[in-house]
Each structure stands twice: as C-alpha cells, then as structure tokens.
Length: 363
Image 1 (cartoon, one colour):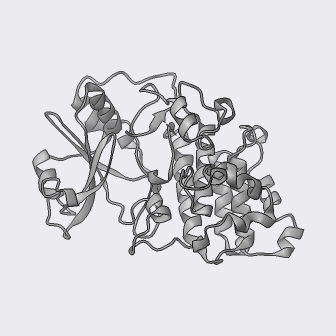
Image 2 (cartoon, rainbow, N blue to C red; image 1 turned 180 degrees about the horizontal axis):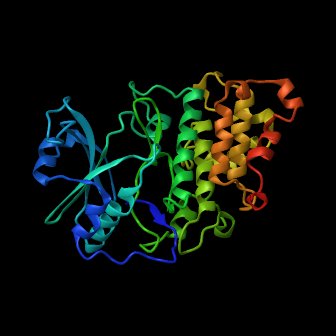
Image 3 (cartoon, one colour; image 1 turned 90 degrees about the vertical axis):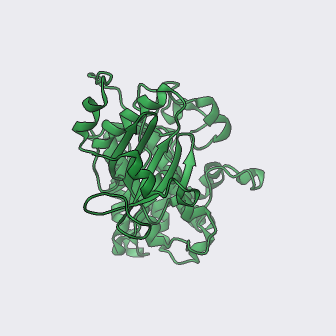
C-alpha cells in the first residue's frame, strides 16, 4: 500500500463525487486500459518491476510526443502501478493519489504522468526511474548493481532529504507513514526521487503494534519518543525514519536483519554506541566503500544520523536543517579531513551546532 499521510487541516476537502471533479484539475493525462496493456505487452511478467499489497508495477513504453503505446526499447519508458481490485477502499485511495498527490511537483519526487480508470481497472502512470531503488543498490547482489561510492551515497541522502523537506512544507503538507530505502528511487544520474504517495491522514492509520514488534528501533520502542501516536505519524517521526535510512546508507545494513547475531540485528541499537564516538565511526561503515571516503565527512554524517535518531524529539533537526547539513557535506572542502577545520569548530559537533540543534531554538 502507499504510505503517505496528509497532515490534519482546518479545511478538509470534501469527498469526491465524480472522477471528473478530481482528475481534471490535477492536469494528468488520461490513458486507456487498452493502450497501457499494449505498452506493457499485456502486463507480461517480465515487464513487472515490483509488487506489494497495493498491486504491481510494470514497465511500459510510449511515444514521447503522443504518449501512444510504443515497442519495447523505443520511445519513452514509463512505470505503471496497477492496483488490486479488492474493495471500494482501493478506489478511494486511488482517487486521492491521482488527484491530491498527483498535483505535487518537485525535482526530488517521482513525477506522476497520468491515470487510467475503466470499469474495475485502477492504474497510475509515473516516470520510469532507470536505476531502481536505493534498497536494491544497498542490499541486492547483482552483477549490474555496483556498490555506491561515498559521493553517490551522500548525493542520494541529500536528494531524499530535499524531497522530505518539501513534503513537510505547507505547499505539500504530507507526512510519510513508513519512510524507507525502497521509497527512494534513482534516475539515470543517481538523483534521488521519493515515491509511493497515497493515503491522506484521515485514511487507515499506523498499526504501532506491528512496527514495535517487528522493527523495534526503526519506529523506536516508545511511541512517545518517536512522536507517533496510535492515530498518525508526525514530521518528527519522519526525521527519525530518515535517520535510520541515513544510517543504512552509511553502514550498508538493513534496519532489521534477523540473520545477524542477536546483538547486531537491530541496526540502530548496534550502531548507536559507535555513532557517539568519532573514533569508532569506521567500524560501522560499509566495507564495500573500500576505505574510499572522507573520515571528516563520515563523522559529520554519522553525527547527523545520531541527531535524527534522538529519543528527545526537541533535539531532532527539522528536515530543512538536515538538508542544510547534507549540503555542506557536498562541499569537498568541508568534507575533507582538516585539523584546521576542527580547530575552528568545524568538526562534527560544530557542524551540528550550526545545522542540527534543537528545533525549539529555531525561529
């Protein structure tokens, strides 16, 4: 299922009365089911990009100018989300995603191109992201997937942070229900774009019992620490989730891995002591980096992750502050190991005093 929630608002849009009322203002292209079948070669299994509780995603091809179906390898590739037809609830969620969230536009959000609604068929059409998900690059061992370099990892982290910061802004007003590495897709230049938008805040809510049992550190053992309630997630819980994603980027480990020894299964609990010591940062970094990283940059990224993972919500930075901190790491001068920088307060502590302090102290 999609996993975003709209924040509560003083004016909640009325329930849609017709497809025309919703879809036309969203400026999305209307596709016929026949054309999407042709574009995917009748939704052939080898066209499938992935699947989940919401349904399946297929790769298709269309003419770049007319958007008419095209032969594989010609024209423009697209990604088509074909929703399961289980209940009226699916229809409501589909309408919400196609209209409200279809209006969102940002360089770090996957672009929605159109929709198809015919009889029982509910489909959404998106731009195709050729490099797949961050999850694939971090965890899948395939010949065509090379380990991400340090620079690319920081580039992806920054792009994801910018996408989240936009979603938290008044322009979008959207909160992720479960932000994770599979939600970060990469284009041909490894620019990160966030995907999987759908539920508004008033739709079915987070089940804290599942998350606390299965992902104890990702959502934190105490809901109050994380900023979650039994009703909805918050911007603060999104920051915590981003901290876990950043930690996964640094360590190349899943947030929860039952195949590891008992003391290492929970990534946050295992890494937290190392994050607190600049001298131990190298012990948590992905071995596939081959030592090709800036120690100073790694220390600052680790310190930022630790801030995001704080059990004290007032200590967590806002996503705007996270963006500012990661932008500084993109500067090679700032990322380079520099004793002079440390002497001038440019180390990890000074870095976070500038960009990641308590949100209560911000204007």
